[in-house]
Amino acid sequence: MRNLKIFPKLFIQTFAILGILIIVIHLIAFLMFPKVYLENRKSKINIRANEVSAALQGKDEQFVEQYLTFYSRSSEVKAFIDSNSDSGEVKIDENAENSIDKSSDNNSLIIETRNIKLADGSKLSVNFVSTADMRQEAKGLIIKFLPISLAVSLAISVLVSLIYARLLTRNVQEIKEVTTRMMELDRSALLPIESSDEIGQLKAQINDLYVALLELIDDLEVKNEEIIKLEKLKFDFFRGASHELKTPLASLKIILENMKYNIGKYKNRDSYIDNCIEIVNGLAQNISQILSVSSLDHLSDDEEEMVINEILQEVLDKYELMAAQRSVSINNRLGDEKIYIGKSALKVILSNVVGNAVKYSDTGGIIDIGSDNGWMHIDNTYDDAENLDCERLFEVNFDVGKDNSNGLGLYIVRNILLSYGIEHKLERREKSIRFTIKIT
Image (tube, rainbow, N blue to C red; front, side):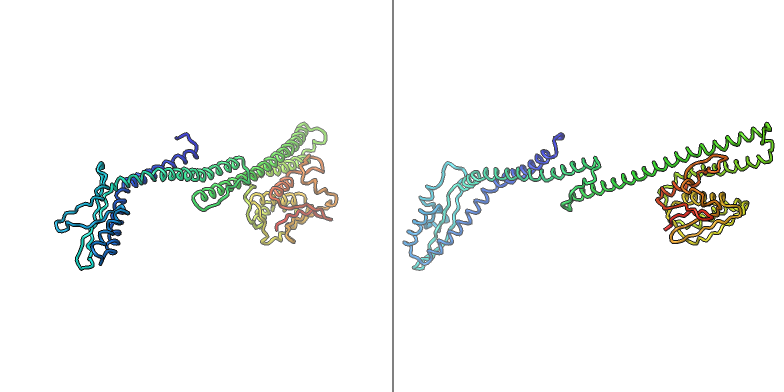
């Protein structure tokens, strides 16, 4: 029984319950029917006695006797005049006595007595007697019809059990098939809900659970794509950074060794000390950019409405001394403009853009920061802007001693903005360079 499938198990259990119930009901009917039948027979004899006695009221004795004789012959209930009414004894008529089955121990004798007023005013007592074995008759009737009733009832119970088991197993089978499709991540696999009962509620819960699971999977896929994109960004970043650090270090080592041994032009140490300081400053900036990449792990899924000026002021304070050394003035005309981005990402972007603007502005130049038509711009003066390849500035291309070298700053900025899907561009003007970011 434990290893049976749900359909035969439900069928056997349902049929067993219905079968036991049917047998008990029929057994009770078999035991109770004779008594009920006897009471019903008494009631019928009582009614007949009332009817016959009412019909004989006011008749003469001879008519009554003939009527009772004829009635007794045509009916199973015998009727005759009681000649011993004064003694209290009831003498059974010969016809009634012959109808008794003397071999039976369950003969039922029912006697109903009625008084009739004759035409001459005298009274006559009439006995109505039933002497059949009514208990045996009752059993005969119930044995005749009980097998048919039992067979029909059992057939109906089989049909009901089949239908009930089929209905339940159909829902279970449907749930099994659809959940199998759900295991295969079939997005169209949803259970049809046709009722509001417990089975319907179970189907609804399974559907809700599957939808939530799909949403979680989609969310994980998005996060996984972001992680892959971020890892690629970091890989490209460190690949370029390694070259950017090795090249100035090698150049610095060569200068220092030549200065140590007073080789050629490097005898003028005071001049080349300034070159060494410039290389060290460049290295310091590059290391700062490399360290900023440690925050890239937190640049995803942290977007919020940021007031740009709050972060910008921190960045401007950081580059205030460098700008003063190069006599570069900064005009910040931003107000309460906002952008939807992560805080760490915005800080890295502004730090790199402002840092490049301060570093590459002409001495005594101007940096202008403002917004116009939903775009934020950072302009810095640069006399040779017309000959500048703006697209090349976004690439990692560093080489000490070459005029076309550029670092990692704008490369980092572009990749961060691309990861957030924010529009941006770098434009050259007549005497300046403008970097713009879409903020609304």
